Length: 119
Image (cartoon, rainbow, N blue to C red; front, side, top):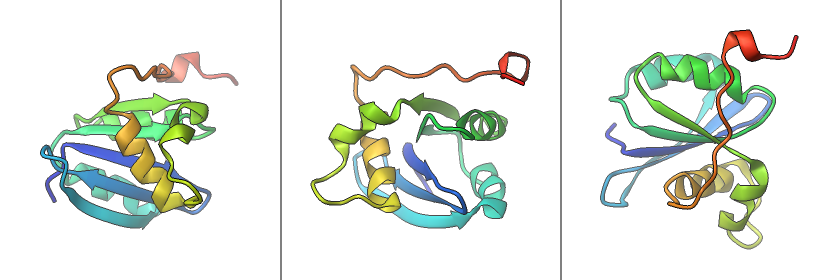
């Protein structure tokens, strides 16, 4: 799969991704179990990946960055304006995150390293 930008929505049991090619063409919309996430991202060429800042986002960002990807965390309140009207589900959130991560005025949350995490 070829992608320039991936929006990823993390839920309790699954990841939803929305991949877009450089020209804006959607290349994939998929759902993965947590056990499949690492193998998926390890098989991709480095790209921009956006996800909402949540409880496990720092862990996943560190894991995914190991494969050369540029991972950016977005505050959930900043993603909300990108979600379509009445389309509140994980797949719609992944698409909104993918759109939001490319916004030139978007503000991102820094990814915490292992030493800066709260115990």
